[in-house]
Length: 67
Image (tube, rainbow, N blue to C red; front, side, top):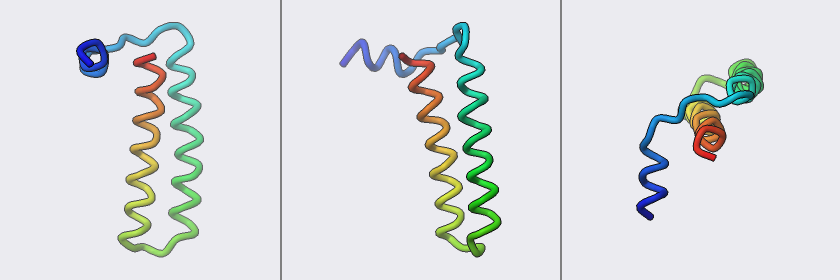
């Protein structure tokens, strides 16, 4: 567990090719966010959908950075 904690809580400088992956993930998520915004009525559920999409991007990017 020590190694995992150390890895999860350290700065991970971007390596070659990683910034492009981050950008691709963010762009696709932004497309989905706009779709959700245009198709869903303003509501708690819509807000949660967008919040969870933001979390998905964050975790996807963390998986790239950490591994």
